[in-house]
Length: 304
Ligand code: 13P
Ligand code: SF4
Image 1: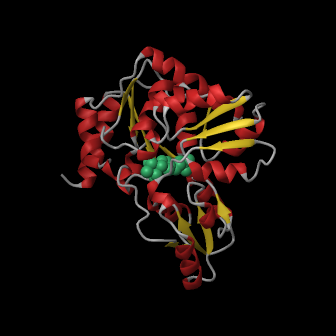
Image 2: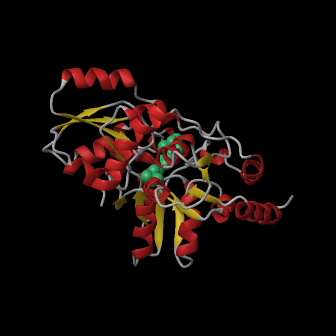
């Protein structure tokens, strides 16, 4: 089957089954094109509260499917590849959260949405890279245990000196692999380009950037900028939307290997099979969904 044939089958099945397809900017271009909604993690979480359909197919990694399920416990939530899992989502433990709560009074456990439902369930509030600064700044607690990502935590902590951050050692292997040397080399090769990077990158990398923000933040910054050339320091799936919105601008990867192997497990073949078979489905216990929902709803409330 060609990509076009799969796209038209997907469209037909979607209507028949009253399904909605949501996709993150890091999945393949053709999967983004097959989706009803494409966005960054914050957009997908917010949008998931507004879906009026029987089935949600989440084209992204497993924690994104779990988030959609937590926000829609009565809907069927499908993910085209169950093995598409973000390693960082597992880089903190429920035990470390409990230990931190023992150690500190006046503590908020802030959980980046790139985490399992189990971690969300023991946290006070979730954040995404698009809203973490706003949300942490609005918390009454002085002590902030930020899980799982060390780099996003440092990026926020540097801007909120009034808070006492306790760091966890998780990281995104895609963004964490970028180095200061990569940035200096890229800037030397393209001296007129503005460098845009994701806050999951190391501080030594963000220190070199003209703009630091979430996936959607980078897309908006580039689209509004008068500059014509950009170095992109995030997963390269984002280039699809960047090219669509900015046909007159030129983009260069800021480093090699900016590809998330798990996001790339979501293919058109698997999306089509998922719609046909209504599998794999995200199944979570009622207790887990209820406990994970509270910090997600708090995020949506505080982000307003
Ligand atoms: P955002 O969608 O918040 O930019 O996060 C990027 C990411 O790594 C998602 O897995
Ligand atoms: Fe996880 Fe990084 Fe892939 Fe996002 S890009 S899913 S944080 S490994």
